[in-house]
Length: 312
Image (cartoon, rainbow, N blue to C red; front, side, top):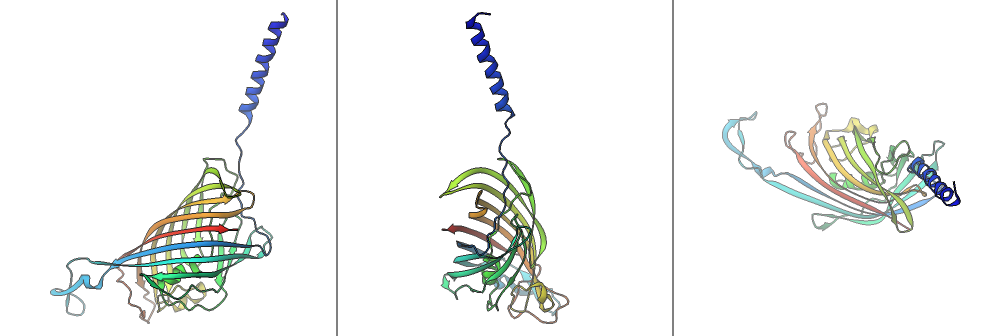
């Protein structure tokens, strides 16, 4: 074989070897975990809106045709609805109170400033009592409790106050994933009886400011049963005996989240969804709610949107 053909053969062999090397290189896999550092403080600007649609009491008229238990007659002539809305804009702070041996942490989540608008009217500022939240490294909330006394007297404001927005949530896989991979994560919020799930997917990598992030899409289905007191305020597990009714339903949300790969923190997230709920009196309760609740056979719907962005 002359020099010319030997050169061609060498190039062909080199090309085959390089081709095999390229084919053998697996796509990168990413281990997505929350990273906590003692005393580290992170601030988030959070906005949320909830619109509740429920039947109007004027939808029901006494026509005297179908006897009810009181001897009168109640017939539905035309179902009218009313809407209530609440908007929240708050600056939150998350401070790592204690890093746990398994990598999780106890985090103090508090509201630094903000406002609440109810049906166009300015309401009392959001409560600033911190919530102590137990996170694991996958973003699961294992437990949470208030560190002060609550003064909220409104159900919607209570659900959107420090009790519900006092924590950030991200849905992370329990093993390394590649672009396009999907996973399912169980979802449970302390105080909200019901086991849900998140179907999540790693969509792409993208730059957000100075952070290289993983873009995660998640669809969350969460059955909810929240025990309420006579003021229709959510109760902790320790105070369930004081419950007079329960909020029952299912929440469906879709989230898009940017998660910083190296820093192990949520940089921004946005979610939107709906839920259908009923407020059901408890048979074991002898106290009637101070705030009239919808009949247990009448549903009301919530439309919810929420967004948070990390502030340097």
